[in-house]
Length: 303
Ligand SMILES: Nc1ncnc2c1ncn2[C@@H]1O[C@H](COP(=O)(O)OP(=O)(O)OP(=O)(O)O)[C@@H](O)[C@H]1O
Ligand SMILES: [Mg+2]
Image (cartoon, rainbow, N blue to C red; front, top):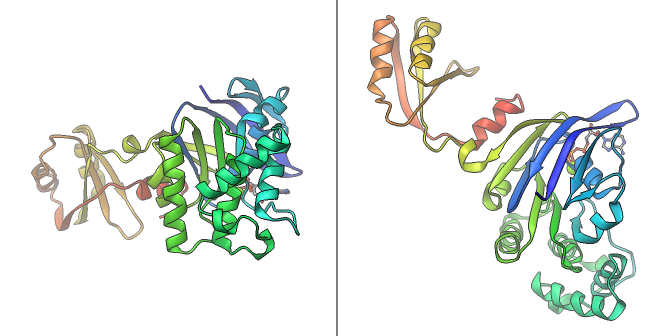
């Protein structure tokens, strides 16, 4: 197990940022998805040992996050949300320094710095001052410095921030490649569902400091379920009762669109039959796609 957290609480003064997070993450690429202020970055900082939880405990790569922070940090690559460069330093010296700070001997750190900069596509610009880098280049450099010491686990905080669509696509491909080609586990924080869907096999959705949903992306998407959207005239509750008894899930949004998720092998004509039995008129009926977007909206309470 690469990450195990038990009931983590953390407050910044009066702001309760994390309210009892328990998690267990094994291999592959995992997305930590949540709206702004959900507590994603705080959780990463706790796992890195930069912040100490008020309550709760956990292990990262088998090390205790309260007492063995230095071992954890040696094996984790961290791409922070904000800029982390040192003014007046060129990219290769900066990357090598980050390697040294993670415990690499100087020469080896320098050698690796060149390698990772080529790997992220900054080979040509590696002697330039980081101050002169564009936003896209800065994101790549942040990724390079996270990879320099060959970490077992990579924490990426909002890796697609500040990027245009092409830049975003490129960095997602790079991360996807790292996650699948190398023997490295990746945890990506984002508030952008599409980024997580592009790279991760599993997702943890957090909202207001709590875990709202967790699972494999396919499962959460309910691949086996069909979604029908209908507008009706009549008593929804009667229809809901019948359909739920038949294994469906029924929801209504603010625009009064009724969403019916039907289990595999459910014949959608049963929806009409159930409606007719309850004297409900079906005014609109469309087959739609179940999406993670729906789930995300539902668990974070927006629609
Ligand atoms: N240094 C700090 N001092 C006080 N409050 C903080 C501090 N850092 C974060 N917070 C608060 O803690 C909560 C969680 O913040 P956090 O940065 O972990 O969220 P996040 O999910 O990473 O959000 P974002 O998507 O905006 O990066 C928010 O309410 C935030 O305002
Ligand atoms: Mg954040």
